[in-house]
Image 1 (cartoon, helix red, strand yellow):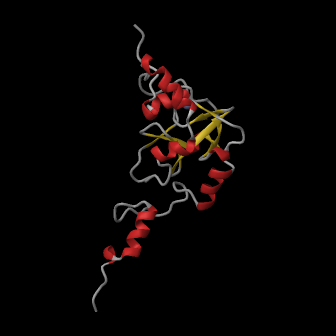
Image 2 (spheres, rainbow, N blue to C red):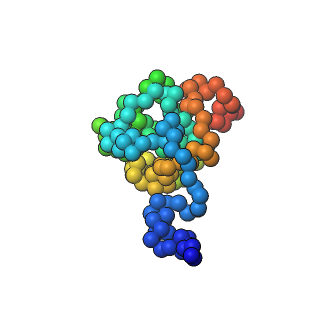
Image 3 (cartoon, helix red, strand yellow):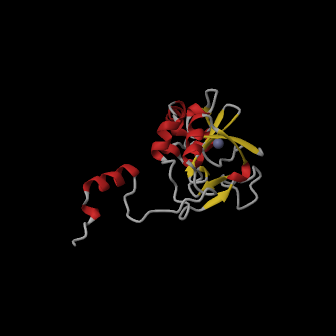
Length: 179
Ligand SMILES: [Zn+2]
């Protein structure tokens, strides 16, 4: 009997493409402590979740994550995407992955855009003032996720650190020293 080479089986290749796996063997065993269930994903997108600080993490690119998904949090009406230096100090956060998950209209946090250097956003450069304002005003979470693919993160490979307290206990401050 001749074994079929599934790497040349078009429907499977198309399926892999749709799943966004460009490499073979990129599989993680499902672990409910580290991987979102389908239900959690839809709740994050629709209603949002109230989560304790300890459940959130930050990735090396500063983005916030919950299990194997990038997430955003809303504090009052400010949308945070990263563990920025304005990150609110709370025990619980309202977490979601879409605008729909946050009841009120939100304004994106400029400190987050700064720490991510999102679309070249940079408040340190005076000549960028007008440009920065545009990035801020035109911000949409949906567009953000096309730059920072939210899901699925590979939790076997990603380094995830706890959210810093505002007073930043570890490491030197990231802002430039004065003088
Ligand atoms: Zn922020």
